[in-house]
Image (cartoon, rainbow, N blue to C red; front, side):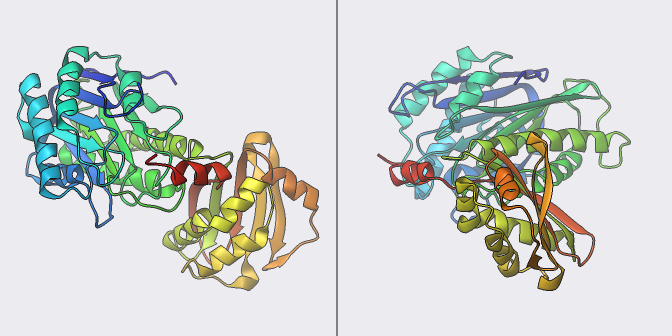
Length: 400
């Protein structure tokens, strides 16, 4: 994907030795000026040291951020006070080279839980990153935050004289609850902290919180959003006439990144959109869609190309959403391959549909599952992938 470069940012990514092979493993994203910042983090009660540190920084009144330092190899989670100290020390080393304060540097980590950071290697990496910073360093930074990802994730939008560009990583342990695995989004728009936070939460709810790979919420989920105002636009507030346009553009970037994560899910061969309509509320629609998207039985049916609609209705039934089984309808489609939705269930019972036509839709690499509850106007879509043999192979040997 072609990225647009927000003004006033420089990035770098390189290999310093945190990974055993030669892949890039440490990244730095820097603004020439202090940024308004917002973040969303994992709801997991077991939080990594960098998550705790970044939350404390962004909770501070008038917090300003200059840089984001991200490493792979170690999640720096379940590492206690030494882990917090290592996160602080990493920020201090970067800040000293950048000429800012440590609290202006956010730290992100991903990798094996319980593994301490190798601070000798980290410091060598930080020293190498600063001279490597450049405005077009997006691809290097995106590659440097990958773990089991097979490709970097990057998305970019230009809107109203400003640019919003982001990177993300994630392929497994994906069931975001407040954020994604790791993502950094940068914009040169001028925007107030309140407006930035509101736009971010709106975008995350419709993107990263609407995808799942395997139903596991990480200890390290973090999405950091920085705005440096270099575009020179009138500062956006929640009441600005142009605020909604910014919010929409940010949502577009976040949705692209979130869907890229699902498409690159560990061992994934299928991408599926689960849409629930006619629910009693949007919240109920989300409950039902997530239950289907999380279900191992549904996900293995996706992998096998088996249009097993009974598994889908069973997941809807246990989702916690209000359901009247006698009103449920179900369709299978594949818009990407011009296969219109085929109705297989009406009023909770199977129709005399063409099994071959249903199978044809389930064997495509992109699948639509459309569920109608017939109870109201609630609607939601959750994006997921299949569950293959390769997922087990990857996660059965993650540390080896």
